[in-house]
Length: 409
Image 1 (cartoon, one colour):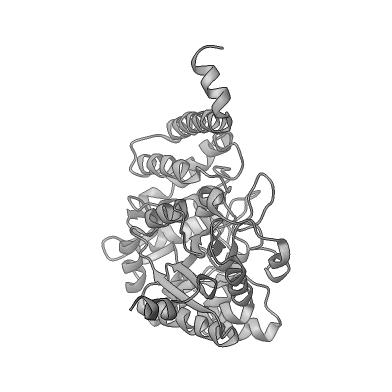
Image 2 (image 1 turned 135 degrees about the vertical axis):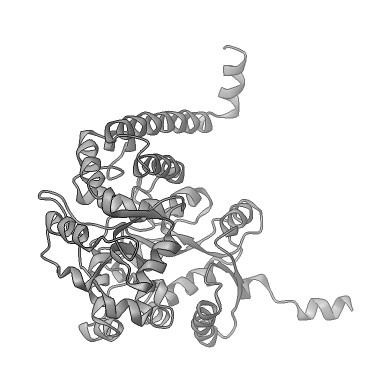
């Protein structure tokens, strides 16, 4: 029996273990189909897929990557790469030439420009506007405000949708409005400095929107969008799979903004990385080479609309058109994604995100004035940055230095 077991076991060099979040049935089928193609090309290699859930998958990844036997390839959100950086294998820059220049910075460590992950699909919360508003890509901030105010007629319909009490989505659905109004929040490092005087003015303009806005969780905003009961809202490209939404709404290639500002959404995406302790680095890299092509990513995005768009440079205009032909809104959504802004890649960015989302909720519910919100954000972000700087310094002290510091020498 022991001999049979030994004969039937596969050498670890022939198995590439991939942990991924494409766990919904349609996603998993589409991803599995791509992996089957890789296995055909590499007959001696088998890919073992382990699906994760967004609810607890990140914690499982943290434990697995810290172990002596991690998965070879891991699927990460773009916002997680900096946090997982110590556990990831640095990659060479050969992937850079395949990527669209707008998306190439995803997966690169800020302090030394080392690539740690390859972006595969990209997305952004794009602006849906009800067709009855009659605005297009030339609309100004003032025109948008006037049109959504006129659309607002509760309880039948509301002018604007803003998000709260929904981790990660508050930032994606509210911060772009602050940028469009002229604020610099989270657009530079140190983050505390980005909570400057421009934020006071931007929040004042956003506050002018609140009388004809509804502040709800993402799923409630999307339900209003499906019913055609909201004038303008930032939402995901997955809503373009709904024919009722496509009929009632246009997507603008940029967010209407005040003079001197830019109408940008937040760039996000899904990446693949190799664990620093991967047992099968060679075949793991071969899998990334296989996936890192427009055709592979485009096939997946075609089958899974909520994936967004390929991070790679289209090989031709015809290739891009074949993906965007599904509806006119897809072309505008792709333009808005290409023009989206990537947030700073800091290991502790998610801690900063929690601070910002909590204070934005206080502002949106009218419990803080703009100046109070800016002051609290500046203070709390500076405190976080100070604590992280101390922690980083302590982590850099050798055991010898630490022992001598403890006894006062």
